[in-house]
Image (cartoon, rainbow, N blue to C red; front, side):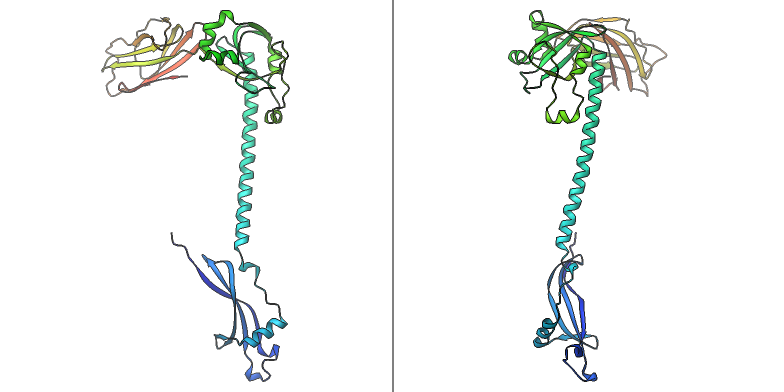
Length: 346
């Protein structure tokens, strides 16, 4: 990119010699021109570099004698026009534009935060109204914002107006150095339980956006202790962990070997989304529990049929619906083209 810069000048004042008594005869009169010289970038004046004092005759400029310059200065104040020095204006304008842009960004960011905060308040309320036994409610001590001061509440039973929880203190979870689900499974026989009303849980949701920014929310005495807590999150745990181990297919048959590294479940529905594979899995299909080190393997396959072929149509997708050990429904989408196959929780 070529940058154009240099020096130019423009006329700022013009006098006639007889105005200052430099000449008395009409035929001796001449014009005096004062021009402002300036440095420019892309022809925009940035700052002045001096003045040109000249005699103008027949369209030509000639140097004005020094004594004439002194006399003119004595009798006239010759100032450079403000637009000679545009660099401070441009810098100020740049800062102003930057400030306005930042203000707009900050305003949009604030609006986005308020929207997210409002949606999260509503979401927490929905979790309370529709609690399930595979969820953990997270409480934060309003006086101490550390991982040790958190309380994790595992939903055990849901009633019309209250929920029975198992309590897992944050300091205890940290001391076991294990995942939340593993900590619960290994210690649930020794953990305390508590019943909390849904109304009290909803009161523990911070609904004041300004209070959330200043950490001034009072909280609720949910655990019948001297500590006040705010409900900050609800997480679904004990989710089925299903992965594709390998896939075999030819023009007529597909076999998908999957693994389960979580609790037992049963497949209750297999529906084609694309293609029309005639799956032969007898439903409901029971899948035993597995672990990450020893996953349970199971196979989904189709019956060979004259009415079905992958010829010119290798792509497929199928929705698999399961019920976990808590009778909670989960859906997975399996899709691929034989050589590349994927599974997604949906």
